Amino acid sequence: MIKRAYNFSAGPSALPLEVLEKAQKELVNFRGTGMSIMEMSHRGATFENIHNEAISRMRKLFSIPDQYEVLFLQGGASLQFSMIPMNLLKEGQQAGYIMTGSWSEKAFKEAKLFGEPYQIATTKENKYRNIPTFEDIQFNSEDAYIHLTSNNTIYGTQWHSFPDTGEIPLIVDMSSDIMSKPIDVSKFGMIYAGAQKNLGPSGVTVVIVRKDLLEKANTEIPTMLKYSTHAENNSLYNTPPTFGIYMLGEVLNWIEEKGGLEAIAKHNEEKAKVIYDTIDNSNGFYVGHATTESRSLMNITFRVTDEELEKQFLTEVKEAGFVGLNGHRSVGGCRASTYNAVPFEACKALSDFMIEFQRKHS
Image (cartoon, rainbow, N blue to C red; front, side, top):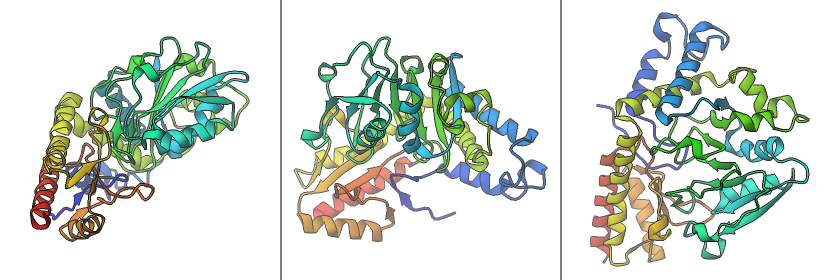
């Protein structure tokens, strides 16, 4: 039995053991080819099948309508902060950004280089402890698009439902909660996500974009930064991250085998509950950062109310075999990232550790 760490890292994060073991078996001789997937041509039939299977699995799991392209790009979600306004924000247009944390701030900063974005709503004054209410979201009917971040890894907040933007395309950065639950893709103009939380290793960025947006996109931009370039070439215009796409396809297959997104969502709720219950039942020994209604099921952020005890907690929890529980450097505290591949057993073990640590220090 392989000893595995209790991996709560925020990203790159835990991968399903079954997927890792399958990749290990196929690493040197992929399905009788005598080559690793990392050695073969991205133009060959073997990789093309892997590539297309990954797209098909994503379409099936997410019930993606035909009027959407599924693209596998590079550069992470951070490159999308620039590509979105570069392609979709025309001269004289505005785009509305909903501010819920560091990643929406970075997206807004990049958009200012290409047009006139504005902030629709923000919860910064509350230290990003909550998601804005729908009543707070007022936008202009002529906006090119509305942008938001669905889950905020640093602050531990998540949108549990999305605003209706009508005819204005809603663009969502789902990097840290994509494929964690079913969604209605048709409500969005575009979804994008780095793979390294729920979909596979780092290096692949998934973009699901409505075709009509590509038809109206700006054209006077560099070839590699046009969505249309990648859509017209099935994301194979240049050499893609072949191993990452293979792994992404295997993770999607794993989700199917686990019962699909409904089963994954139920499992994620159970995992998060066991940790949130420990926080809520600690009589103030542990305090969550996010307000209850805005809590993330992917990133559980909390503090030990005594600062010296918090340092001790982080030291001891690491010694006990738990990885990645330090909060983001910008906010401190503790963070448990409970992405799809983190097993319930790891969350229960963390809960047990937290209860015992409190017992010893209360």
